Image (cartoon, rainbow, N blue to C red; front, top):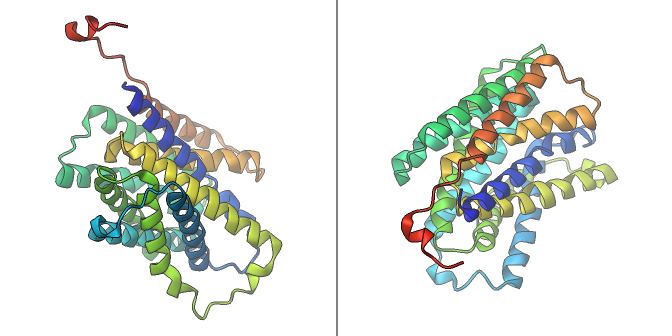
Length: 300
């Protein structure tokens, strides 16, 4: 595996592990919190941090040359993901919402990448996706009771499709723009799109200390830092592989539930974590490519 691709895989995995802390953070939010407000604030804080970083590094460049159409599309898909995912989790529970939302994303990403970018995922992607999605399913059914809400399932599928489409949109932008600048523009536009969601909502729960800590964690770590890592990794990783690697998120969520929230990891859930880990290894580990005669003649 090329060094740049190896680094890209690590960046994407790092982003997925940070996303896996979202559910645990929400568990510490006070009763009565609004999921749509939480999603909007998450984008707003992450967008401001990324924009400050992009400005400090002078990476934005002249706005005249920006692919505004691509940025708007990516921002719309980002906003749709926030709304669909948090609403799906609220209706179906964390297990089903995460399984359907995150589990359906690799399939959608593989199809979209093939149709619009001509990427052929290959057998490694297929095997890794089957293993990881199977692990997600085992994690979901390990809890026993499963809430099957038709609207919640549709929302979760919408979240998976939005995530795949967002990844495809920013992949094209990253071919010509620095990762920090791309994510700053996309996340800020997404925050503006979601800002009307806060109108007329009861925001009294935000005055509590726990709320502030949860919102800051979601904005700084699960949005600004994670999206920056994801964009860095996506420069050298294909769309389909990047989304499949993101399935480390539910694995991280399950482990945090065990270590932080005191949840019990059943045998079925343990097998699920193992399958996800095996799927990630399929993508991460690859035999080194033999050097060509021309490369062997190059000086040290």
